[in-house]
Image 1 (cartoon, helix red, strand yellow):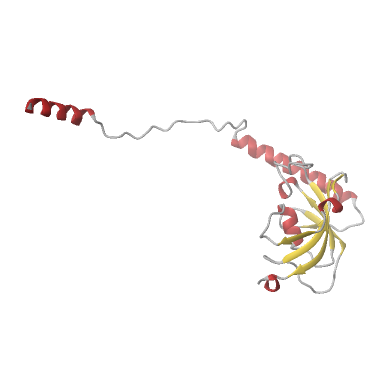
Image 2: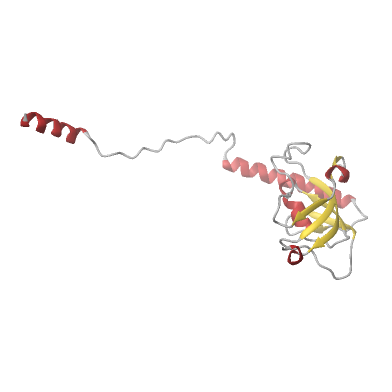
Amino acid sequence: MRVVFHTVCLIFLFSCKAPEARKPIHIKSGSFISDSKSISRNKELVAKEEKAIQKIIDNDTLNDYITSKGGFWYFYNQKDTLPGITPKFGDMVKFNYDIKDLNGNVIYTQQELDTITYRIDKEELFLGLREGLKLMKAGEVATFLFPSYQAYGYYGDDHKIGTNIPLMSRVTLHKITEESTTKN
């Protein structure tokens, strides 16, 4: 009996191996385009959009466009030249805007979008508009030209704005309420 017991123990002892690490398996990402091709394609897209925007700016002799640090262009339809505040992080703003393509075709009217109440950098809003609002004072009206990467980018808005569409938007900033006065 002892011999059988020792034999069974030896079989179990030598039949169990230490766990082995799995070997990595190379899985393709499913990407149809290589990284270098993607970078090249994006550079071409940005150059094409900036060329179209520059053409609009060159043909518009009535307005003085300003280039933002964020990579979009704008001019003031109505500018407040007196000292005043511009919205900062957390401030509440009320504004209206419309959205057009670069040919001036209306995508969304101000009436469709209604008056927006937005807390600066604390709520969802597309990047260009979020940054554009920070350049304005209450009572000002500005027109912005956004390349697609500053607007809805590759995904669009799932409604009327498609993939990689540069946009034009006229924004009216009605009111700024500083964060210190909006806290409870």
